[in-house]
Length: 235
Image (cartoon, rainbow, N blue to C red):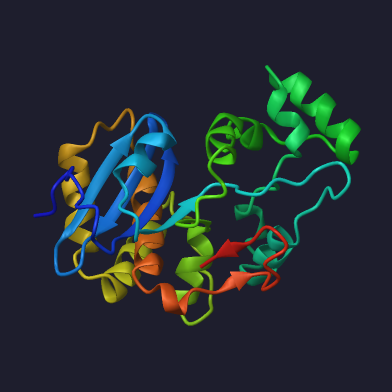
């Protein structure tokens, strides 16, 4: 049975998939030749401190913010096209200027001045986590990812139609993960037993596992866009 937590040896090549959750961050971890494990931290710094130097870390959170001079990210546009007609599953990145906001009204006001458009409440609720990532975005181990892009890639390029909030969609994703990352179903069962449900939800663990599965094969990762001079989403 996968362990809920494990201290990582600093010399290991490790795949990590990380998702934001109500209590902070949850990481699904794959050590070479070992079962999947979990690591929970209230702050992203705790995830990075636990990760060995050779880790490949994919995180489902925005890295590389647009600014007033360049208010749209090409990677968001390309990601929506990849999972069409479910493009609403990709949130728009808020402008960097909005990170200074102290409430939703102020964030919208700042965003309008910077880009001509307000931000959604869903995006506003991510701002604190985006702040945490923004200060460590130059860490070479770290890449932005998106679980729905990963699921589509593993599903022969086709996005999964059913929402992960529905039982059919949840089970479809688990089956797909088990086919590419053996032990995923057991890892989810372990998470339900060992991780605090008020801090880490089942969907958070599912998304973290998807990113871990992609990170386990870094040579096969795809970047949107290919241009390294722009923010990118890896899957």
